[in-house]
Structures are given as C-alpha cells and as structure tokens.
Length: 103
Image 1: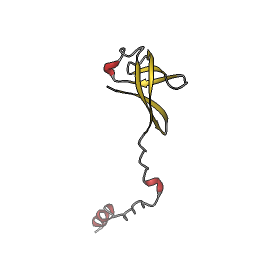
Image 2 (image 1 turned 135 degrees about the vertical axis):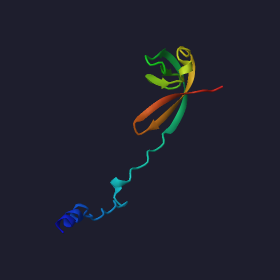
Image 3 (image 1 turned 30 degrees about the vertical axis):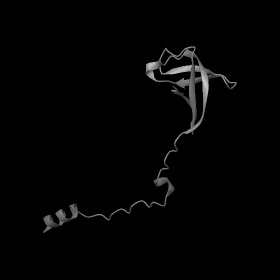
Image 4 (image 1 turned 90 degrees about the vertical axis):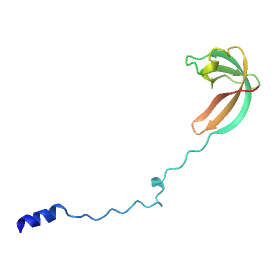
C-alpha cells in the first residue's frame, strides 16, 4: 500500500495557470508606424562614402550641409559630380535620404 501512495503523490496534478488578460497594455505591443515620405529634392553628389552604398550630397534647392544618401550598389562610383533626385523619409528615429530613379 505504501508503494501505491508514493506513485500517486509523484504524479500530482497542479492547478492550471490563468491566461494573461488582453486588457493589459504591456501584453500587446504596438505595431510600428510606416515611414513617411516627406519630400523629393534634387541634389549634387559630392563624394563617395567609405561604404559603397552611400554617397555624400549637397542640396541644390535648399541651403544646408552634407547629406548621406543611400544608392543602389550598381551605381557605386558612378554618380560623383552628377545631379540626382532624393526622397526624404521621416520616421521615429529621424530623417533618412534615398535615391529616386527619374527617367
């Protein structure tokens, strides 16, 4: 009889844990917002950056400093001293600039 009691106690069932209520705001993360395309502008490529996917540009229309613009890999070292179109993309981390192909 003692052996049977030991076996029963070994497989003792525990109470189930209640699920987390969905009303708690920390339990459901917010979806990230999509980046907002703010404007397109024409820029002059001044130099190639150390990373071949980036170039340094100066704005033709606006007063400003040097902007780092991401470009396609196939255009690396081909855009220096040329005018390109760039779109500014604003998100929660800041503003980034991307090359826009215009035919």
